Each structure stands twice: as C-alpha cells, then as structure tokens.
Image (cartoon, rainbow, N blue to C red):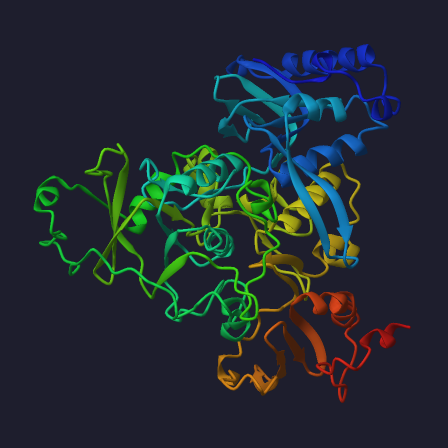
Length: 580
C-alpha cells in the first residue's frame, strides 16, 4: 500500500521545528503499529497499519479535521493522523473576517506531497474506502488492505444527483474536473441546457449568459420564472437577481418537437430517419438514485468556483443600467427532465454530436450539452451497504449520518462532518445547509472532540462555529449575506409590484410568537429583517453597500437586543451605535 507521509517529503522548517525529529516520530509510529497488530484478531490479518486518528475524505471538512488534529498533536507526537483520499486535497487560503462569524476564503486544491510537506505528522493514503468494520475498528480500502483506527472521522462529502451519469453530453458540476469539462464544452457548444435552481445552477447560468453566441435553456421545478435560488431566497429577494437576466427583448428559440408524456408515444421530428433509431434514457428519481452510487467524484467546488475558469470573470454584475448579457435564454419552469436521448450525429462534416432533452411539459429541445445541477446526496455507499449500520445511524430523509453539533459523534469512536452528516443543534440561530464555511467549522470542531480538547459546554456544545448561521456568497456579481434564521419566513404575501415603494412589512403569528418581516428593496440592494417578539432572529443582505451592516445585525441576533421602535430599514440610522 502506497502512503504519502513524512519520509517521502521535505519537512516544513516552521512546522518541523515544533515536532519531534523525524526518525523518532517514525519509530514511534512503527512501534504503535506493532503493538496494535499484536492485539488484533486473527480475522483481521489483512491489517497493515494503525493510526490514532483516521479521516475519510479530502474535502474541506476532512482536510480541516486533519490539520487541526496535527496541530493538537504537537505535544503528543505518538499520536498519528491518516487522511484517506484518492484526490487532491481542498485547503483554505486568504481568510478574510467580515464579522466574527462570517469569513471569506479561497479554496485551493493541494497535491498530496505538498500537503504532507506542510503537515508532516499526517499520512495521506491515496485510495477509496469500500467498507467499515465498526466492531474491530478498521476500514477496508479499494486495494483490499485494512487501516485500523483509534478514532474515525467520516468526511466523505456528497455525490451529485445527476441525470444520465454515463452520458457523454451530460455533466454534473461537482469537482474541478467537471469545471474543466464545462469550460472546454462552452467553446464548441452553441446551445446548452442547465437543469436546476440551486447555487451551482445559478452560477452556471451566470457563467453561460456571459458567453458570446450562446443559447441557454434553463429548466427548473420552480413555477415562477423570476424565483431564483429558492433554497436561499424568497420571491422578493430573487427579483434583484433577475433584474437584467430575464429579458423579454431577446431572440429566443423554439422547441424542436412537442410530444405528450405517455407510455405509447415518443417525439417525432421532421428528419424522419432519426425517429426510429433514436434511443431515450428516462430520468426518474429511482434511476438517478441508482446511478449516483457508482460515482467517485473529487472534492466539491469551493466558493466562487468560477474564478477557477479562464473564460469569465466572476465580478460581472447584471443590471438594467449596464447590460452584460450576450447569450439568449429560454426559461422552462414548473417542469423536470423526462428523458434525454442518446447522442445524435450531426449531418454536416463536423463530426460532432448533440442530444435531445424531453421535458415533462412535452417540449423537446436539441442541445449540445446538458448541465445537471439538481442537488447532491451524502456519499456513504461504503457504510450504507451494512444494513444494520445504515438503519441505526443514517437519516432516512436526507441520507446523512445522524450526529449532534455537540460532539458530532455517530457511534463510539466514529464521527461525521460535512456534506455526509445530518446535524442537529440546540442553537437558536444555527442550522445545517451543507455549505463550505460550515464544513470547515465542523472539521475543526470534530478534531477537538476526537482529541478531547473541545469544551462541549461552550455555546450549547458546538462551540463558536455552531453559534449562528452566517454565510456570504455572490450570485450574478451581487454580494449576499445570510444571517441567523434568514429563511424562517417568506414574504410572498407582501410582494410589491411597484418598485417605487421601497419598503414593506408583514406581521404573522406563529405558535403564539409574533413575527415581523421588514423589507427594503431597490434596483441595487435588498434587505430582509426577521424579528421575533421585537428581537432580530434573521437577516438577508444583498448588495455591496449592505455588507457593512452584517456585523451589526449579527450582534443584534446574538445579543437578542430589543429593537422595538427602532427603524432598522432606515439607512440614515447608524445601527452600530447600539454597540459603542
């Protein structure tokens, strides 16, 4: 079994000076392995190594856990750390603190050798995990070898729910390899279909709308064509994003056929010779679920993943005042993909192919590429095969390993973090959304719990990372900050069609609690504040000028400040005065 560890790399002078000499550390590891091998059962004869801490997954959660465990083991060099991943590792860079809980950072993919040079107490095992033996505390690798652990952290991430995984003209944007495929495909694709309405779909649409001579078909279940990113925004908030995107004054294209959805019909085209030979792949949920288990993806994309592409800048802003869009777009809403055809050969001499997308409203479009961005599922195939383990520890609703924010513990000596975990919390202001900044904090906290250095009484057990939901992102060049229970209440009932009326509010009683929703909107910004019994519990801030108020609203939420009688939407009121 090939490992990447300190004996293969150059030691970091800074970190190396803090650790024991390399020969001594290697001898301690060997002695630890020998002691463990002598105590394992005869049925465990394939075990070739033992580590104090083993992490499965090289995404941001797993990498952060490994880095933290290395740092916490400085005074205990006999503790050994192993990170199992066949891919490059995701590491954080250039952290900027917007507020005490809100951070901006870049994600870089780090080669294994570079990572162990920087963190020489960590061993990288470049393989997949195929199964887990909970009783004897070891995992089985794709090579058949066994790795024993003292404590195990599962950070295996998630796999995309993708249509037609093996289809050459269908891609799911999940890792850096898929972004390279997307960038290459854009150069020779005239019409591209994006399926989905979440964060990746929004970013892909923003990317494609800036491409010259590109026709875009955007398909989503949402019935309202201006309701973008419904996982993050209500209708009123997404109106700001739709400004300049949904434009009726552009040239659109028509479907190539219309065919009812039933068992006895298939689309027919004018070019009749294609009809008999055309093969359709039907895309029901059961097929998607079966296919996704076969995937072995790299680490998920980080924030602002478009910056990794060479084709477009992520700083563009779509406004009515300054139109940047060059592509034409057809928006199909309230529908899903019914079927996708096998690739069809073009009749010209280009030797290229295209495919047909058949929607549930009967419309059929010819496209050069399909981008499937319909969500992800926890990547736990290696443990879900154990029926007893799955029934006991996997959430039947979202497929994640059930843990509490207090200790992130699945079972004795087994912990879970990141996209593969289903986390509950006693915090009033935090909830899980499987985001990058959350994965980073979870990895750090799991390492502290695993090493018995976490204060489990701090902020309800989850520490500072579980005190409040705080997320910063950017869609279509518009900076966005989400705080607390920002999505507790939607405001469809207070939509204002006349944009000259900038402010709106709605009062609602829920289980005896008075909830007030305050909204201020303009062509360049959007602010939604949610108050519960005169105390701020959530906020949505959109627009460059609104970011400076993020820390103030964060403090208002955490301090449970009584804001009765205060005009929180008045931009002339300096809310920071509350904390002077």
